[in-house]
Amino acid sequence: FADDTNIFVVADSEREVYEKANGILKLVNDYMRCNKLHINSKKCCYMYFNDSDSSNFILMSNDCEIKRVSETKFLGVIIDEKLSWLPHISKLVTRLRSCVGRITRFKGNIPPELHRDIYHTLFESHLSFAISVWGGLSKNRLQPLFITQKKCIRILFGDNDSYKDKFCTCARTRPFGEQKLGSDFYKLESSKPLFIRNRLLTVHNLYKYHCTLDTYKILKHRVPISLHSLFNISTRKETLLITKVPSINFICKATKLWNEYRQRTSIADFSPSVSGVKENLKKHLLFTQKSGDYEVWNEKNF
Image 1 (cartoon, one colour):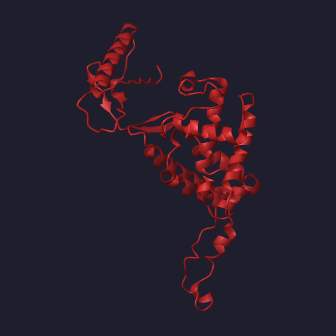
Image 2 (tube, rainbow, N blue to C red; image 1 turned 180 degrees about the vertical axis):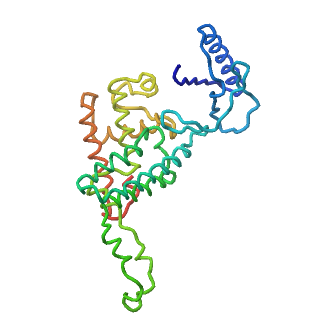
Image 3 (spheres, rainbow, N blue to C red; image 1 turned 45 degrees about the horizontal axis):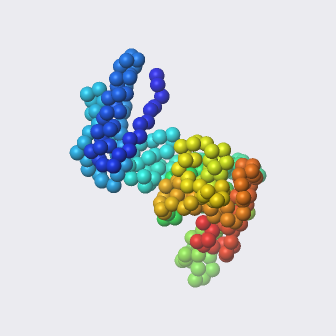
């Protein structure tokens, strides 16, 4: 059995892209037939990346129409036809909430010194998976992930005893005038000090960390060449990238983040090791994350 195969077709118009795709499928079917192989057309699907939802064209394989889908899962990431990444974030939030539930159940049986390892293993590993691809979204779209992340941080590293003590009294035992609970009673513990004390990055800074690090690896080792060729490298300074038109795609975001890191560190070439850049980058992001008020998040932290 052959593994999954993906074919990407690019053209200037909708008619042209469908004609090219059907031509490629015909060549693929001829190759399969000559080599006595078979394609299961029922499992095949295609996605048309465009702002328009309607289409008057179809794709055919072995005289069978291939179904069009609006989203599909590839290597653990849900890709949608608008490249909004909202279906992936929605699925990821559900998965992370499930992780938080499991952590809550067995957290009391794990020594506190292992809680940080638990966070990295069971929570951050899911949160940071392929984040360089989908993490360059606005703060509003990342907010559900940040809320879930803060909940996990409070459960693992917060003052849970004080939180539970608030619910151990009834109205009759409270002082006169305080029987009715106000907003202060339900106020959650600030998560920023917990991130600072445990040297943990928010989802926004995790994206900056992985995106900048991946960019350095691509520029340093020049692999994969398909991605390296997309960067517009300055002819005067080998570490300077020419900024392209603002966009949420990886190349544009990576160019901006890399130039910011390059300017702060004054890196002149690609001789530093990846581990050295990794350590320096995380130190810089943690310093930026804790700036301002100790307990209140602000725009400069992200």
